Length: 71
Image (cartoon, rainbow, N blue to C red; front, side, top):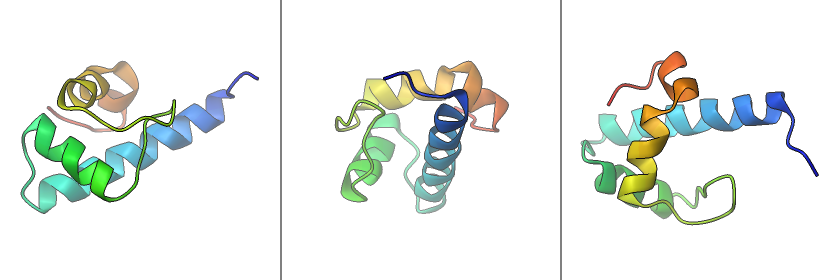
C-alpha cells in the first residue's frame, strides 16, 4: 500500500512540531531529541524507534527543512 503525499506531509509536520517541543524542553542533540520522541511513543514512519542518526537524517531532509526544522 502506497502512502499518500498528504500522509507523508502530515507525518513530517507532526515530527517537526515534536522536535520543536523537544528543543524547547532543552533537548538539542540529535540523540536527546530521539530520546524525547521515543519517550513520547512517537515512531518513525516504519514504526521503529528513533535513533540519533535517524533524527539527524530527518532534520537534513528537504521536507523537514521546508517546514522550518533547523539543525
